[in-house]
Amino acid sequence: MSGSLKEVGIIIGEASSSEFLFSSKPEDMPSRWEYLMTYSEEEQDGQTKRVEVVAQIERVMSASQALTKELDFDIIKKIIESGLADNKVWGKARVLGYLTATGELQLPKRAVSPGKPVYIAPTELLEKFYSYPKEEAIQVGSLITRGDVPVFLSIKGFRRHLALIAQTGSGKTYLAGILADELLAKGGTVVMLDPHADYVFLGRDAAGKRHELSDRITVFRNPSSTGRYSEGEVGKVEPYEICFSDLDIEEICMIANIGKHMTNIRDGLEQALEFLRADKDAFRPQDLLEELENVGSWKDRGVDSKKISGAKDARKYIKGVVKMEVFTAASTNIGAMLRPRHLSVVDLSGLSDEVADYIAFSILSDIYEKVSGNEFDFPVFVFVEEAHKFIPYQGSTRSSRIVKKIAAEGRKFGVFLVLITQRPSKIHPDALSQCNSQIVMRITNPDDQQAIAKSSERLGEALLNDLPGLNTGEAVLVGEMTRAPVMVMVKKRRTREGGSDIDIVGKMKMAIEQASIETPETESKRLRSELEGFLEGEESQK
Image (cartoon, rainbow, N blue to C red; front, side):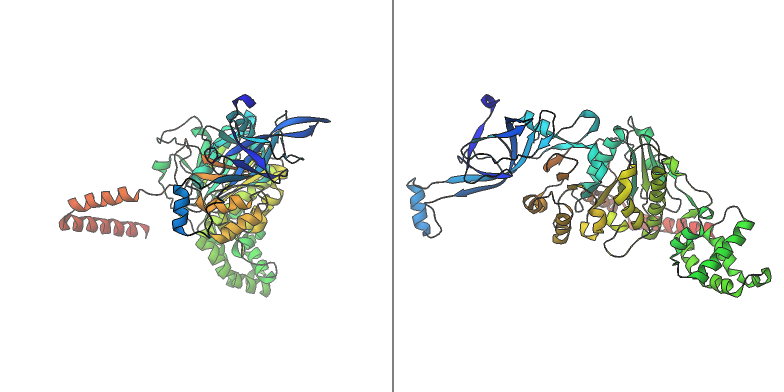
């Protein structure tokens, strides 16, 4: 191979098994983050063999002995004009490792030797370095510095959970859509909690048409959701419903925030449920509240005064449950989502944070129960968008406990998390630290950078410092999904995106056109028509 290699420098000074310095001619010095290759001697199968060590340039430096800072400007110009100025360049490279004959990544145990040449890493070597067997490989993009080298993730890396972190506008939703689409194509069961309807168009290609996997993608929406997009825009939307009468006393107390120490209230509530279940097969929170309002008749039915008093106090808690407007007369079986090679998007747009949180709790609890109980035999990948809202750093939500449980124990049963957030500093560290792989895009907030550094030992200082400078669609991948930390340009997505920014310039041009054809008289008619439509809608609801 050496005959086809491009030599760009020589190793100098002190070198170790993890890094080295190299000197180069100014015209040959590669750019920062370029990949290098050098040869080293390593023990393999009891023999010393020459291996191809891959490294990446972290720093590029330049210096001159003639042009020092002590010199006056005029003298500097004369030195340059006389041709006496020198220019010495060198770089610092981080060792990534070498591949064994079986394709396993190994870190060198010996230091590379000063005096040895370094080469630009050949394309075929990098392709092997960042690829996996076809059945476990997911392509996410290509090397930032080498666009002809595709970069793949290993599906096996999902077993230790993934965090996808980026500030708004960096492309995290776009990339999450690629991951979900690729997992589905490989046979995965994917469930996406989608607070802003960013993923409801995964069943459509970029042109808005159905694709070969569209029949394996379902969008679920709770009837109380207003939805960001209509069913006509999305396509078929299935209801996700929760029947209140299916809940037991513990679940209702949890929803209503009735603590275990509130024994009288719990006893009164349980009595109301007993009367209600004897009278109705299915009921809603409003029915329970009405039963609690009728406690005046309980004394004649032999109920003791403590339960009656507790029932009266329970009213204010159940009123809060009534306001949630999430419960219906039937429940959606989790089996509708847990299907082999199926992607479920749970559209939570238009819901309050409290309602979205409860739906997330309900779905994740059902998934964990089914999979851990051996009632579903295939891996389940759960995407949690806006994860900082469901598992906050401070306080708790209904869904935070089950998310943490899946983060800690889900991999044993086959439930794997993909936590997506623009504010890693706002996520509880227990959940983030369980994500052994991370995809990080542009992050400029210092608190968020610090949270990333704490949660990932693999993200070195050099990569961390480069996060603010990443462009839209560029990402750093670290962890068990990739053999070595890598910077990628995300590939083009084949499905339609729902979370992209609006075309603000185009919309404002349309506003100018609309305003130019709308006279005061037509505007008055339009406003009057809208008001009449609103009043008719209000009247129909009475």
